[in-house]
Image (tube, rainbow, N blue to C red):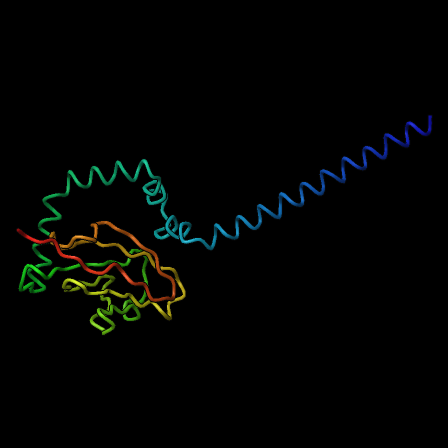
Amino acid sequence: MFRGFYNFILRLIERIESLLIKGTISLLILLITVQIALNDPLSAKLQFENSYLQQLKEIPVVQQVVTYLQRNNSGVKQTAELKEVTQSESVTTDKQGIVELKVLNSTTDQQIKVFINKKLRKTFSKGQARILVEPGDKIILDTRGINKGLWFQVTALSDNLQNFNGGERFWIKNDLYTLEEVKVRKRY
């Protein structure tokens, strides 16, 4: 009788030990996953304005619906913005174009520099920069010295630019970021 009770206690202790080991491993995996998620730029994307509405807009299905509605409703607005952009920066030939970039989360603007072909061309003012570009230009954004991750968005661009999309977003944290080489559509 004592032997059966003794075996029962041994099996109970083995099960408890097994559950404790599995629980510890699960908690370690969860801890590592949460640490990765908190340092990942995708989590910064959800927190850049700290609003539930903005978090809702980042869900892929909702994002597709919102972009579809924005395209249909703001076509006139975008062309008006583009005309305003092209009038303020003088585009002299059809081989030039304008890219307007905007910082989505706030920062001190003077620290963000725009280099074109390794030459300092602009700094951000009021969270925006309008850049006159030509084919083959390489746009480099310099956020060195800013330890906070920054989201940028292409808010307006000339229709002759081939490889940029309006609304395109990218994330930079304390680094140099090279955009694609500028390509212009041929007009014939």
